[in-house]
Image (cartoon, rainbow, N blue to C red; front, side, top):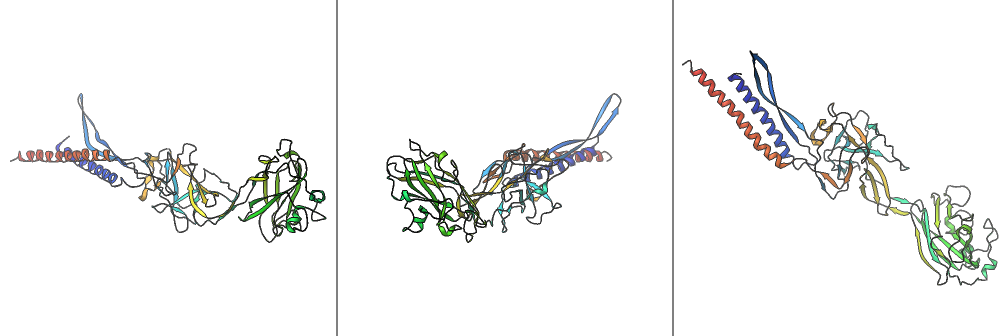
Length: 465
């Protein structure tokens, strides 16, 4: 090795340390950049080769070169926010994003990112600050999701606004009450009749409800509010009339104008029987048709026959599962209702968007209804550090990273989704400042090599003088 080689080695040191300084500076500048992944510098020696000089070998070094190392797989700290659509991945995986929200074709680029500061754009699609749209598996009208983890084209941009109000029709009714065991059998009970197919000759409680001058007055009534398919509240009435010890006539009716046919609002009728200890003998009660049944079905307005809603309402069928056995009693004491519980939700408006740890994006309405919209997909790589980085933290697949693997959050080694959190930069300022010092010293030392080699050349030139 000669003096000229020393100059070149010094230059390589200056160049490599200058690039290292640039890398460190970029890390420090992005210490507050959401989901930023730091870079590091690895130095490698350059060797031109070895020459043989008798029994000894001469080492022929030519300097140093640096190589940028990415730390994409190293997670940053999760930081809490107040925005429900601020999302972070706790664990392994990347969000799948696209550059456009509509008209997405198989040829359009899909990228990957940990930048989860998503907000709804004017059209309602979730978009991060880099202008990329979050993709997921959509939920169909039946609530089903096709988790096709082999096809990236099955993912669509997630839309979270512009959702209309939603209603949930009732499906379950629970009635708690006590009817006084000492209730006397009224005179009306002797003339009470309910033909198999009203409105033939009847003398029932539904007729009395329509016209108090007719029919049979009930001993007790319980109002039961239910929600139809449009979110309207429909009021049903359970009426009872004592027939004999431990046995009562019972009817369930509604408003006559809301039901098809001339039944005075009668929906179903039968007997309620009680055991000697006052509990309901559901197995032998016939209020809902067959003994033991506790389900009431009212057909849709569009139905042409049978018990159904009036065509003017335009509502769907209603199936109600009744629970009278749990808390409906015939005991001594005052006749009273203890509770009437029905499910179903009246029409509500969108209140907020919620994202759970499994990546399910749901719309929460102010009536308590929750509707699933989509499930966020996460992509994993065998070598995430091999991904290429674009402006804004967007990542793209490369040969070094290997192919992506789509996964449902929390399954197959993928991390979970953390709502109201963002991933911070993974830059450690302590390490970076230490790197600044050592890099500056190395740069200074490389420049010293050049000045020393220059002095030696100057001495060599002066020999001729």
